[in-house]
Amino acid sequence: IQAELLVLAAESILSSFSVQEQSDVGVRTAIRLLLPNAPPKQVHRARSTADNAESNDMEDDIIYEPRIAAMIAEALSHRLPSTDAEARDLLELCEGMVRLGSLLIADACESLAFSRALHHNRSNSGNSNFTREVYWLLRGMEVQSCWLPEQRRRTLGFACRRRFDSLCEGSAKDLIAMLSVAAITNFSKTSEKEKHEKELSSALQAAEDILEGVLQDEAMVPVLKGHLEANLLQYTVDIALADAKGDTVRVAADIVHCLEERCLSEGDHGGVVSTLADPKLYPEFLCIAFALLVKEDSSQYGRPMEFASCAFTVHGIHILMARLTQVLSWEGILCSSPRPLGASPSNRPSLSKKEYFSAMRLAFSKGLMRAFVSHGPSTAVKKGIKKRDGEVSMDEELELLLSPCI
Image (cartoon, rainbow, N blue to C red; front, top):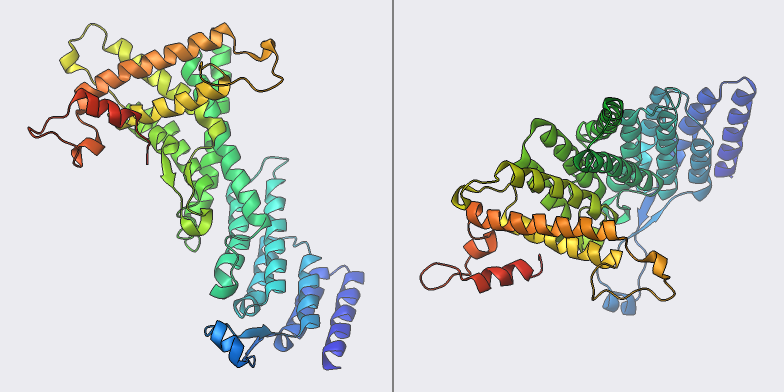
């Protein structure tokens, strides 16, 4: 009866303040009324001998009054905060309940943070305030991955995580596409070059704003340490900044890091082997590397080979060639790659595309030659694959080059 009366009282408060166009006051008042009667409790469930035999470490049940928790969640879900301060106040009101294990209220809090993030996405006459949007997306992710008790946490949440992933990945794709076009295009008109530089600057600024929102969040930085999309964005921005400074060695190292296969964490990704970059981005990264190596080769033309240098290491060229082989297979350029069933002759790669990738492969081969001269044995060789006299045979280097990355 007490729970029923409290729910009715909360509904009356919400209705009354809504009529007076003070919904924000009504929501806060109703939640303050319900919160003291809503805390969940851990109860020791009686278990049979058979249950104990099967599981001796079974967790206690978390029980709370469902009608009151549902009423709080409904009030939060129906409220669209008009300011950041109001949203922050509502989250602070409910934080204690979430930390006690109320999933209903945790979902409502994430929804509240998501709505505020969408507001900043549509603010400034259609121009997103990425730093503020990221801040609120991270608040929703924090509710699900940090506030809830450890046994009830949902890694990074739901709606907020999907939007955050999409935001980071989309920004990284836009920036790397701009860098790829700038690397391989000779603009015939000054106006076209200036237009592209302006677009590139805009894409870089958006990416930096997103990263700023992430790096300023001390609570979520440790949680996002292995986050694929955020790390991809970080390395893409580093590539753009290093390219602007003319630091080709840093550009090369970051490209290799994005294309190199690695075993992802067992908990978040099931231990699968993947690359930081999405496979759809492989051609763009390869184009940037291609342009870098061609420019490097031209600058060293006519010099003795013993003085040759390469921004990429032997291992780095190995990674580039591995990704290039995959792209050639997808494009149907490799002789060994089967043509999809039902594919028409018109879907075959054009002659210009074949010539372009052939030139890319040649540039990578020349880069490998310079990498052998300037960097010596690869890292794997230095770790222990050596002959008796300490030297490495050409066959062993070739085996390293063609071996898997992991």
